[in-house]
Each structure stands twice: as C-alpha cells, then as structure tokens.
Length: 299
Image 1 (cartoon, helix red, strand yellow):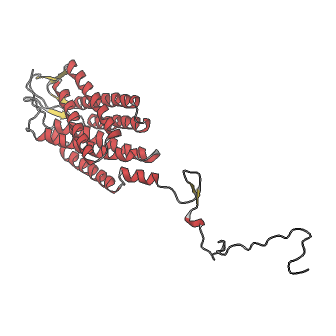
Image 2: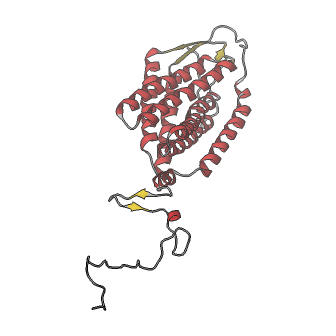
C-alpha cells in the first residue's frame, strides 16, 4: 500500500477547512432562525439560502479545501471538473431536502429522523462523488467497514444539524452549534478519507483533469462573494424575534378583544363637530303626557 499524506501542508488545510465549515453552518443557522418566524414563500426562500450556506460553504467547500492537503508521493492527482461540480449540487440539494422536510414538517420526530437519514446519505454521496472526481495514476480502493462508519457519522451529524435548525436560539447557542457542526462535518470527511487504500501502479503518468490548485483561486472568489452576499442579506433582514413581533402585531382596523368587546380603529373615531361625528350635547328628552290629561297651568 502506498504512502498517503492527508496533511501535506500541515494544519493549514484542515484548519481552513474547519473554519469554512463553521462559517457556512453559522450562516445557515441564521437563515433557518428567520425561516422559523416566516411562512410560505418567505420561509422557502430562507431555507434555500440555508441550504446554499450549509451545503455549499459548510460541506462542499470544506471538502475540497481539505483535499488540497491530500498527496500520494509518486502519483499525480487531477480532478474531473464536471463531476466535481455535480458533487456541489448534490451537497446543496440533499441539505435542502432535509431543511425543507423539518422546516415544513414541524418539530416532530418523524420528519427529523427521515430528513437526517436522507441528508446524511446525501452528504456521504457528495463526499464519494467528489472522491470519484479525483483522477490519479495510482489504484484507489476503499475499506467497506470504514465507508459504512463514515455514512453513519454523516447521518448522525445531519440529524443533529437539523435539530439545531429547529431549536437553537440566541447568538451564543448559534455559534456553539456551528462549531459542533464544523467538527461533525470535518470528522465525517476524514473518516471517509481513512477508508481510502492506495496502491502505486507502475510509472506515474499525468491523468486527465484539472490540477488541485486550479480550483483554489475560483473557489476563494466564489466563496467570498457568496458569504458576503449572505452576510449582507442576514444583516439587513429582521431578526427572528423581530419577525415574530411583526407577525403578532394586530393590524389596523376594527378588532375584537379577547373578552368579546369591540375595539374601534382610529379612523372610525371622529371628534365632536366633525362631519359624521355625534354631537357633544346630551339629547333633549321630552316626557309624554298621559292621554286626556289637561295641559299644566290651565284649569
């Protein structure tokens, strides 16, 4: 079995990969917090942004930044660009399925578990699709037991992440949840990498595809733009509490109080003297005389 280096640049690539996973998870949790306070198309929009953040930045970008530190001495590595991009759409798509399942299914066990299983299997599929996009002059195989372990980790991590999207509130809790999600995603990635078995197959030749660092500059540009746009959107959008207060605020107009009494709107209350307003003077009451009673003052 050939020698494999997962940290060819020391702690730089795993640390940067973890940071990007945390950033993507944090933005995603901020989006799902706003999704909880909205309904209909607005909720769907926030969940879509969350899928882009978690699936795109938190998972896919983390994977390929970590792969920059992967080396096999004596072998050349290239990447199939279309298959690599397909893995990105898989990551965002399966995260979106999980978020929409729990986002519209409510905080119940069934949608949480089903969403976690589907998302976890999808995240593992993204990982191994990305690995299939890696072309090398060596022979690559996988240890089935470790592969299954990585899939299990992905399902557990996805379920926990979806639970966070339903329950986490407040800045400290959100940051803490994002840190945990970053550990889970990184753990799944490196467990999957540990399943790899590499054998050198004769003289090294240059396979077809793009070099690893051909991804680096476009990756940094795209991630920076996406993260900046999402940060601006989240920054100018109302917070979850503000959205809930807005939804609970009564609309202008006549409303019925809880005790059944009617409350008039400001537009229907007119001051005395205005057109259509009641007079401020009390009404003149004239008593009626009984029949056949002579007028008073006459005999």
